[in-house]
Amino acid sequence: MPALLEDHGLPLVQLRERRRDLIVALIGQHGLPSEQEISEIASIQNAIAAFEAVVDDLDAEAEVASRAE
Image 1 (cartoon, rainbow, N blue to C red):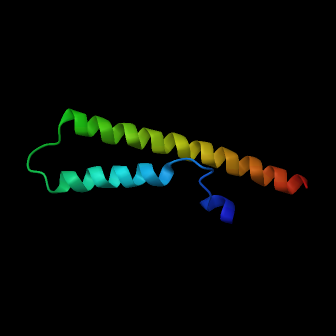
Image 2 (cartoon, one colour):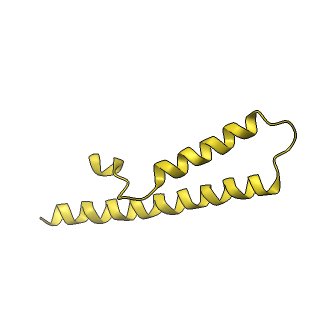
C-alpha cells in the first residue's frame, strides 16, 4: 500500500500545512474572519481536493499497470 501514501511530487503536504496555519490563526482571532481569509482557505481547500483527485487517478493507473505485468 505504499502507493496510497505517495504524493506523486504534488505539494499536498505544503497545502495542508498552509491550511492548518490559516485555521490556527483564526482560532486566536477575535471577531469574524475576513472575506480574504475565507477565500484563501477555500482556494487552498479546492486545490487540495483537486490534487487528491489527481493522486487517486495516478494511483488507480499504477494499480492497473501493476496488474497487467
